[in-house]
Image (spheres, rainbow over the protein chains, first blue to last red):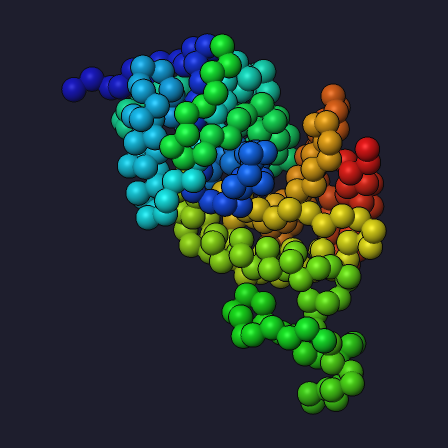
Length: 143
Length: 156
């Protein structure tokens, strides 16, 4: 069996970061709900786990959030933060976004600076550029 | 004086100011630490809520480290030293188990400060088109740099 091929993610794609924790959402339950910066902080292994929208339906995307993220903790899925790949790359040229399957459509954002304050400023920029989508809701078409 | 029930995260500290009394202090000298610093009960409740939700490994579904009681205590200690007149932050948690204090103003103004169980405070701020980030030591007083940033973020 050959090693998995690491493929880049295209600039035109959109990424989803699934959210289980109310503290990760500002104004939870309101029309003005926004994603907090700590949603986009890398984990202990220096990676930020996301899912690509590309090639799957909204329903399939939510299903990935439920089975691959929420089920691991046994908490309900609250929503997701949607982020354009080009916005992520604009936030920091050091970030690397690569497919990392399985699970289906999974990707990792790596290349984070080692200093925590530097990670925080990138996470703040990602949060500013992202859009919160409550669980089960269709995002408004922007294109 | 407001009373709160038994709580592993927020015990009601009844002590004598300065610890001058070797025995339980007389009632007239006791106080509840949650009322010190002029902070609202809602703020302490929010910290308590975040601490509870994030006290187990993997609380975010992605392998986050748990928030430790010592981190909660240090956060409370910092907030009790925050100058009066500054708005209270919103509370969150980070994948490394740090507690986040966030202030949001209008027009892309935001400040995020990370409080861990020890070490410096890490912060980042976006104020319109400018960004700044760095670290500040916290010992006995609220860092002046952070006080200025909070005021700047909240300024119209």
